[in-house]
Image (cartoon, rainbow, N blue to C red; front, side, top):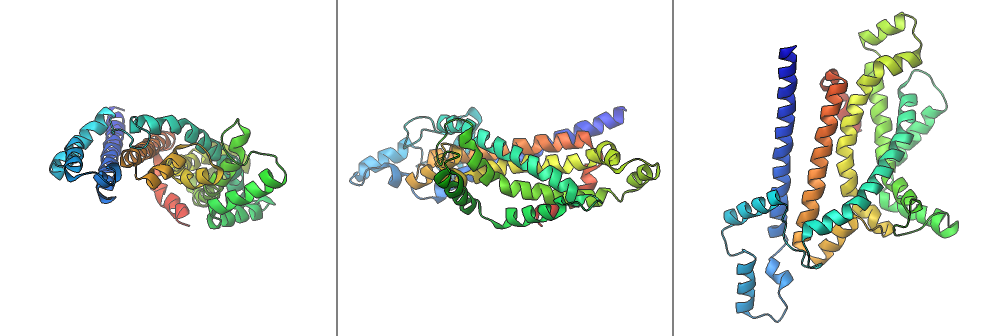
Length: 322
């Protein structure tokens, strides 16, 4: 038992170390983004600023230091939660990003809940042995979910249910009804991927020896799925959801722009248009850190549910690239 506990701790420590390394990579990318997007002085200084004023601004921003020194200072500020002041909003960039984060998390949570509500039953029906009416529907969801762009689907939803029938608001955030249309537009793709992932995982698991043994004992297929196959199915699905949560936060840029939703994605779009580099860096760091943390937490949780999940990562990878 002590050996098993030590091995589990080593695996957990390795995954946490990897997560910290990826977060460092995210911060490095944010730093590089600020330098690759042009001279910050050009964005901040007035067009008629003198050379002396531009040089003074450059010194105040620390841009006259060597690039290695700037990088070290930037990492130190990130560790302290200081990403500078937003040039457009004139307040700490991290505060501006975190203020919009709850609205985006509400949207992504609703989209993920919808994706699970649609994807799990259809995925189980698609990967099961029975051929019911849900199997053709599952194929349609997979095809449409991966082929239809979110911005086009969102525009169709606005025309059909906000303009023509006025069932839901077309824009903004005013109560739970405002989440319905953007959550449907954002949740279509992960729903399709969950259907595909469950179908592939079930096809891989149902032919294992331990499943055939349970079936040979005369257990019903429903009992076999619930008691024996569920842990094996849950692990890759949790790993996928952990990664997909971060992707949904990042992918909400398009959906939030279509629905004029006041979330993190729309903030990032406005920051890019205004060349607000500190705000762009803050959004990149927040979204990247959230993606890494959710993915690591889901990976650890999936491993605790079914330690054999690592042997079936190929099935999950195959589903995610189908």
